[in-house]
Length: 175
Image (tube, rainbow, N blue to C red; front, side, top):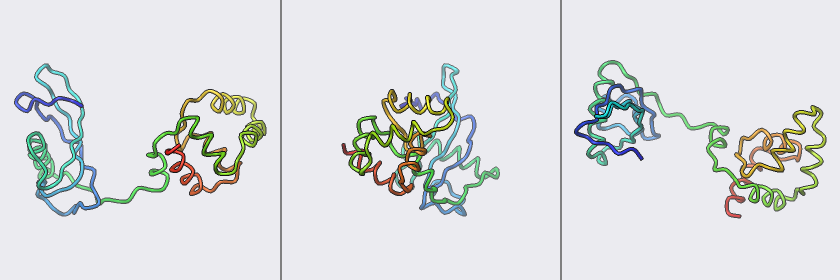
């Protein structure tokens, strides 16, 4: 986590605001907004970086108050806060934690699919480069993300619905 020296660090630009479900985008007082503010800072040594600070009324202290002041200037200059929209199923899937290869394989077994079925599915890939790529991924990857192309491809070939893979994923995290 970046150490912020409030005395010497300057907020140079506010990029925008990601709302929270509780956000009212019509509120103009940034101290009453819930969400995350993205902004650039310049440190005393001249280094610059982009930071994000979560804001919630009644829980903003220290550095957050400086962010609220900068966000208020941004808001007064026409910055708009979008309405919160719930994430799509694919966005939720992309945010799922990775599984180790062990967890993924055990999850497949517990869902009634065998490792031989996976090998057969990979062998059935028509394109030789894609087939070899899938084989390398299956044999050597140490972890898998929910939206990895091999996971998506195997789930279809092995007869899973996306929701079934989500369930497999969640239960496999405990293995």
